[in-house]
Image (cartoon, rainbow, N blue to C red):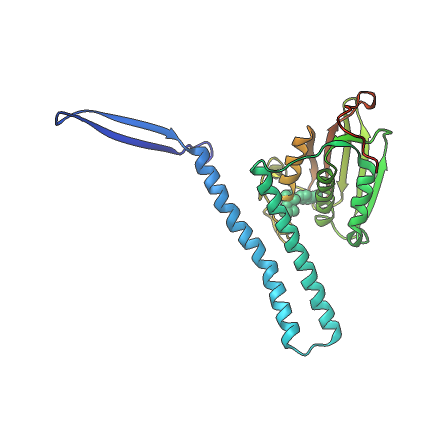
Length: 274
Ligand code: ADP
């Protein structure tokens, strides 16, 4: 239950010259250990479940291809399914490994001055197959688009947020990515015209494995890990992530990163050339 604690109690009777002299009772609050254990087993069962589904379809379709006489169009269809399921498997494994690395503190970050504008352009290009389905608009209203960050990890944040915007919005929908600034931060809005997020779900969105439990959202595959990875990387970069959403109208995810003062760039971080 919420706010309840798990207490471990040790009792020891003290006997002195055959007579009961007292009892020692030690109470230990093991809530944290208990929660970690529970999370671990939940993690293992989710991982196995999530991996089993795409794997079953890879195996099933491969078997069909091996043992059945099929028309060429069918073959191509099955091969495409195998390919996309194998890609999903690979993405899942990467997510699991990322979470595991972050939680064990083994994730290392290589921070440099990086320009996020070309990173966004790459991320949009990499989603090309899907971008044919959605209209993605990038607008930049700031001259300074550099931050101090780990390029690969920042790219991962953008990829996760953009792929969610695509996943949870209808075909043909617009996605607006807007880069701007205020006094202290470089700000990025990623706005979609999708399903939207219920108010009560917003505080939980960045929790591990959290997925919105309604039919529209459930129908779309996912692990509930993407945004927890995003939140972790944002935190390491002293940034923030917030969400504003209207059911049926769409969502805007807003990321902020501390603005860097070009003149005061720390010499130890070489400027990124690309
Ligand atoms: P998942 O793998 O389920 O997509 P995420 O951690 O990326 O996991 O997201 C958690 C949940 O937040 C998703 O299951 C989805 O219900 C909701 N969500 C995330 N992004 C959006 C969005 N742009 N529009 C609507 N719902 C979203």
